Image 1 (cartoon, rainbow over the protein chains, first blue to last red):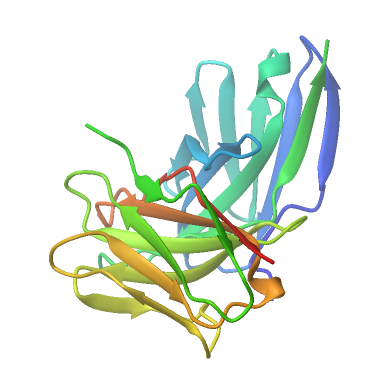
Image 2 (tube, each protein chain N blue to C red):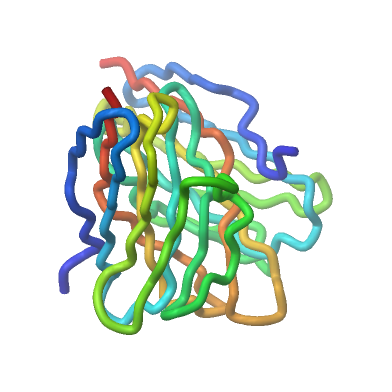
Length: 115
Length: 115
């Protein structure tokens, strides 16, 4: 049972345009969400996160939007650059009322930014 | 401050042999996670450990796989009697395990090939 879903396995965008990666979740106990980027043959690297008390977090070209009522979050990259081509993973963490946080992962979306 | 260190980067084992994968977390991190990425698939959670304790091993196969994180030294993921289906990239991540910051940092991974 996939609690974190990234329904688009791949996305292709033109350089300079906006990339929008989507993520849906099913567990209302999730209260912290993260995006990671992964290049081939490397480990995932943290990109940006958002707490459920916010609906938007911005860091340079990257913005994450959270819609709690729809259990949906999205990552916007603008403008997109060829170096952004990678697999993007969405992860969520449930509030377990303690320090034993576990990240639940989506299957990833492969983004290709074309020059 | 070195990041998460995994070794070896590449490991080749014959069927029936044992594979030992090592992970040294970031300095100050006491929480370690192991993930497996099979070809053409996303990251799959295997096990979550704190020093000397297994917190969550719900993603570990019931047989042949074990993990430890001793008081001193790296975390070890051990696979006994490897089979071809164990061929995958194994990623380790570490975090401080803070309730308000569950962000985890990943190592470069160990690519296990079973021949």
